[in-house]
Picture 1 (cartoon, one colour):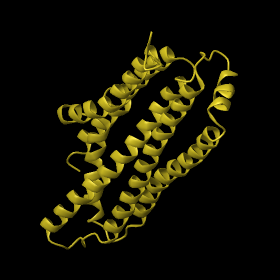
Picture 2 (picture 1 turned 135 degrees about the vertical axis):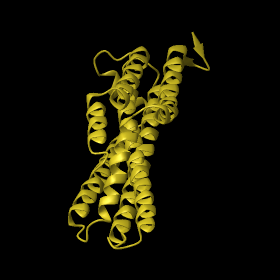
Picture 3 (picture 1 turned 180 degrees about the horizontal axis):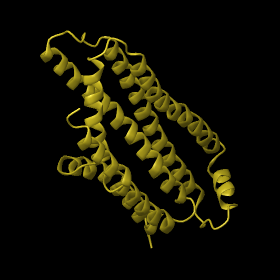
Picture 4 (picture 1 turned 90 degrees about the vertical axis):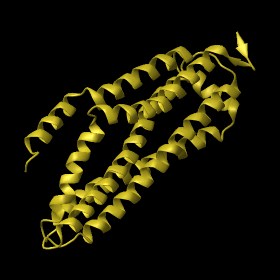
Length: 236
């Protein structure tokens, strides 16, 4: 059964992918307001970190930490550029050649050349989205570095320190969320790649990826450890 020359199973699989990818982001934001998550729990430590920044004159250790965070975002941004270059090179060979190359792989379901080309374009758009998120995360970490350099002196007014710590922690959280969304795009791009094999495999892998991401963010051992650490250092 086909709709507008597109196999119905491909339409259903792509629809499930869009719902899981976009819907997961919305659901995660709602759940984070109601229960602990990796993002919200790490946010507690970000706020404490920014408060500690205002308690010391030397920010050498803070600079090293920010450098590591920035390096991670830039690594994925540069890696995404290489991935995009490879995908565009494959797409530039023409739809027929893309179909021939993919068709030569084992267990790949037969599909028309234009459909393979469309799948490649969707995958490219996913990595473009990831690139924008990683570069935005890197820029936010740059801004955070400037804020740390301009942190109030330990002898400054307590209200000034409190406002600074809250604002700096918010920027750190925004940078972390942008990075997390970029990583999420990488996870779902793995599901997208299975679309070249078979739409049913694509649908199943999409559901598996969504479940893995939910478990890691809301029910992982690391989250439980962070909650314990947050409670143990709550009065520090």
